[in-house]
Amino acid sequence: KNEVEQSPQNLTAQEGEFITINCSYSVGISALHWLQQHPGGGIVSLFMLSSGKKKHGRLIATINIQEKHSSLHITASHPRDSAVYICAADSNNDMRFGAGTRLTVKP
Amino acid sequence: NAGVTQTPKFQVLKTGQSMTLQCAQDMNHEYMSWYRQDPGMGLRLIHYSVGAGITDQGEVPNGYNVSRSTTEDFPLRLLSAAPSQTSVYFCASSSGLAGVETQYFGPGTRLLVL
Image (cartoon, chains in turn green, red):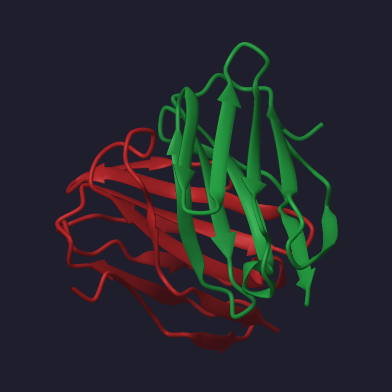
């Protein structure tokens, strides 16, 4: 069993829909990262959180430390949000990654 | 700032050849790391460094060597390439420990070992 599990693996949505991507982890962490990998391959860090909730524009990330679970939400989704979203559990500099969720937002 | 740069962008090697993947950052970041990304397996940590002169192993270190002689550079060496090392390699850096600072990723190096 992977130490970091993401669901769903693939997600197709219509423009404007509210999207949720889930991440569960089994290791102790100092932080949980959400990354976005563009179709061209580049990786961008979206969030780093160790508790509670963070919001950047239409993106919201939450984490429940007790349940070892994090969610990434996208409100009013847009085709430009189409990418692979990756969660990563950081345990004392040792990063463990989920397999990623491929999101496609159709116009 | 150029951020995190990686060279080459693409490389083809024959089994048994050696090569060095270069990574440099101009943000004076202490933490640097190397990952490989394989289809269906996600990113996996190879080696990391918390500062010049300090390196440590990640999840999949076998077949790779690293050194950190300066804050800016963190090269990854393949001493004897194997087809199993065909992958996309990403270098990343952050200003502090990975757990407390956002990581910045390089554009990646696509390696094919024949």
